[in-house]
Image: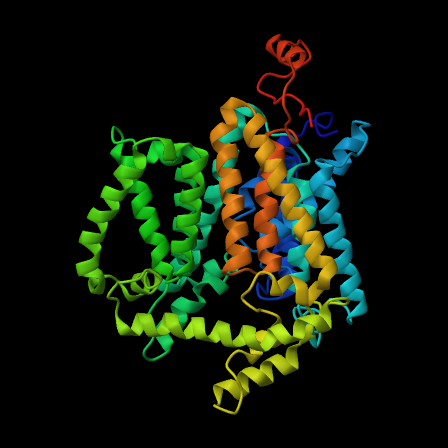
Length: 515
């Protein structure tokens, strides 16, 4: 029409851009109001819609382990929660447009996850609902319910599309390295860049702020710890233990050692245990126990001990707290007392909680709890009244124990379903490791070792069901996507057919799984 009138194209652009700019300017005149944020988010969302339609699956993989939050939504959910819903919706729409039947990937794993979702939903209905602090309700706990549902639906979202073989290492690396975004929280607090907390979680900087405010405490960098752990995991996935100890490339070992030291800055003893479990699993999966590596490791351990033991007191207190789990280390009394205090706190809480387990076997307690009771209990503890310091944790259901965070909220039914999921996941990861494409051997080995490490740690040391379920699902969902399902042994006729190129097959795409 504009061409027929003899008007240039820029006139049409201005006729659209100027009214839109006026509408946006009026809508966001008050940047703090929820309406302004919602309008701005809708405009940005419409602009990003073409990218979302093209890269929705890759976006979910990239953000699954990230610390990014969606600040304009109630409760500031993580971006992985939002992208899970978007990915599922896009996958359904895509199959409908292509007239493809909607199938359930890896039913062996999907079945227990569906049961977990049904148990959690039924428990919420029978125990007074989900609650919602962000929605102004008196009952809190909706975020934990959301964490479980994201874990359940996240598996279907992650495994909804197979990952092309030529993109496997890139996407697996981004999946792991997205955890480095956690360091932005510590950076924002240290440099007083508070605007970054619009995009990143504020919870990670809590211990850092506590170290500055509480007399006699010390600074702990949780975000740096998580970021360094992500880098260390990427190095293990990319090169394996065998590649890290390749002395012809010493930078690998030095970089991994620096990342491992960064994990100690959080002051968490658990990362010493996680490192030992993960490296031990890879040690046997790579067959290094049949080589001279154990002897070399013992020599390096002796040299490292000779270097660290006399100089432990020179390390930051957060690092000393992390190392306090090791025997015979002369750490600062402040760090040892702080670490011992949390251990005693947990043991005393578990003694109080364990007698309550039979009460919730048939019908769990659920995640919802009274926000008023929680606040009053915290105030009573803070003011020195006759309350145990762990009673607020009991009210909120944060038992610091993997089994307790399943069996008390969701009873025996949730526990059995979760056990079923763990067994099915280990079976699937083991088959993909044994029968997967040789080019994915390093990734499949790391996924299996990482899952086993997290599972053993969850069952024996520490766990939180809603958070750890997302971690477990992320690993097994990525494995299913990378291997296009659950692999099985290949027969001779199938091996021959795979060796012949097919005109209908897309280069770089993994072949369909046999199991």
